[in-house]
Length: 157
Image (cartoon, rainbow, N blue to C red; front, side, top):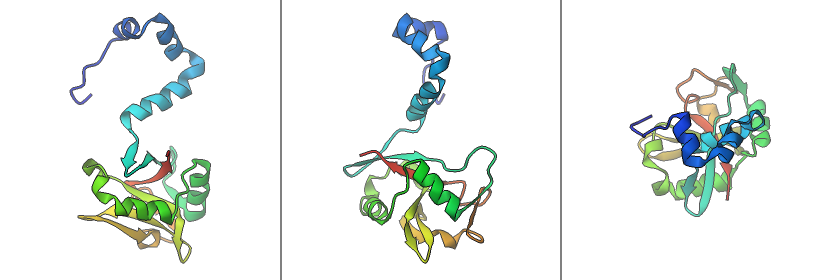
């Protein structure tokens, strides 16, 4: 992976010990191990004195999502952020990892104008705009240019 050295399972077992390896391989821990592995791939975003986790909101097999379902999903995922967090991120845009520019945009379901949630995206600079700008009939299309980049943020601290 990207030039990062990898271990065989035997090397990993030797490195972390038999007890921890057994815990990793336990069928009852698959969900926990998967979530932990995701943190290695998708690290927390530290912006200012706040920490966020970027979360995809479309589920496997979904290719369309209406605004009400998005909001319900955001609540379910503890990622129903609003204007305070959206404006905070914009005020600290120089602290957003530069590798995310043009790759991610974040929806703030609780930051609304005329019933539409706001998202913060990149177009040479970070900017807020209403989801109705790109949503067709109040639905997010998976194959649309923007939806491929859209994620929710969960505030961790």
